[in-house]
Length: 224
Image 1 (cartoon, helix red, strand yellow):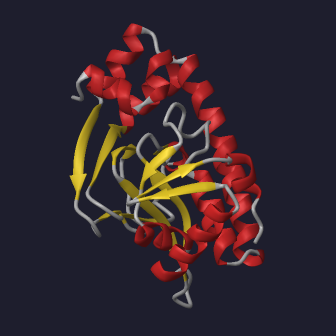
Image 2: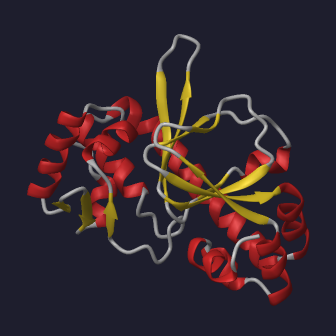
């Protein structure tokens, strides 16, 4: 069982629950830690929990039959995902790997469905979640074919600051150039060059292992 204050900090959706709903969510959620490079799940696994990132950074990716790997999304603290897999009761369609030591919140299936059936606030959150993730993956299909390295990095970085998926998370994220490269599918050196270009354009400010967003709208639309 997760402490009440911890749940409030890592799950924005919990703030809109009734006291009864909140306690049900809290009783059904636990925390598990994964080391850097560890897999939370592989394609085909049945992870019987709705999943959130309590602290850290995950990469959601898939590999084609030809062996080509593609990143679907980066997931920072505050992200919740996997609701479609839980609702449809199907195996995971992606690999999920920790890019650094990461604490993952796991809500048991029974608790998820109790909230799904009893909580209007929880369902509103899921609707917004589905809409944003759909837009993200449609965008991925477009920019993976059309954008260069800097454009791919810009889009991946912008999604980590999506105000619907990550409300109240601020404009600064602790993330290394290596991690950004892994998310964008480019080398660390190329990530460094791309960040420098985005900084020159006034879209981001780069610090030591952190990035601050200066213009999220322009960053999300960047096509260079």
